[in-house]
Length: 266
Image (cartoon, rainbow, N blue to C red):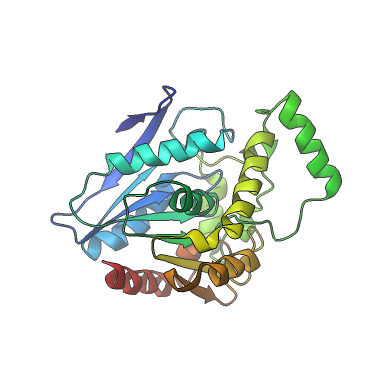
């Protein structure tokens, strides 16, 4: 099915529903990927009587839009539209991974979120290493003269998971891209910084998970957010995990932790 954003962009949405679900997960995926990479996650939740919905961010997957480019506020608007389209009578939980984790956290902090809580996986709150000053300066210039130009997002596929099959499928997936625009990266960096600075404003419970060996997004930034957010944030650290906990060889452990938290929240 397709959602029509405020500016007319068509967003691809898919659902994996069960009869009489006890909860519904609403996914916001990461940079460069798409919702189809979460089918195994959806099926896990379905087996546990939980419905699962997802959409492709603008500029990603089967959705319209320039690959890797978006205005941050428009993405938050898209998430609001997506959640409104997830019409369930049971509790809804927003689930954001990587860039989707950045977006989901900012949505929870900035908008009136009609959800019971959030699962936040390896969120892009900071890069593991700060951008060199010269590169940041170049990005700021490009943001003025060519804000939507396509640059490489710098993601090394070998760092997403320790499962070689996952990496191979990621590389060969025609719906995965490696693009990002100067405006999107700068706005996302600022949004990640803002989320950490305003973590104490969190009003809904979240489960925040992150692997200690993640070299794509900052584990330390997640830890800092959790400390500032306080009792509403349950932080689970996975020793030696790479960037995608749901795609690691020990993913069943991650799913079990998610289910335990969901049972507590609903």
